[in-house]
Image (cartoon, rainbow, N blue to C red; front, side):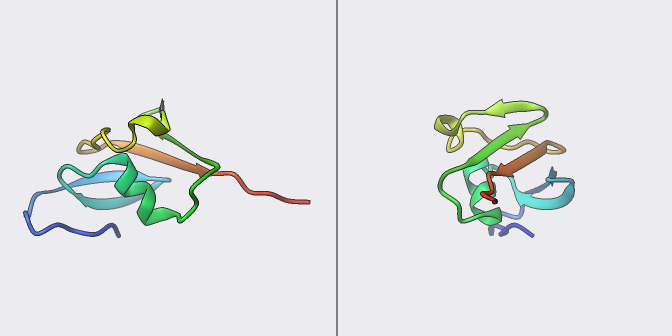
Length: 76
């Protein structure tokens, strides 16, 4: 579950297929930080639209948004 803020206003979003309650005003960057510590190799889409890394801090999630976070994994 993502961190709640004291404001008391929350919304429901779906992240990687799982329901989460997040504080109103949560950005893509904040949501990504709760899911992974990876600083590279991460891609995000909100409602099937790719969100460029340069806009993560300013892209605010809305109620009922669907967010997918993909992390590159090396293998052999």
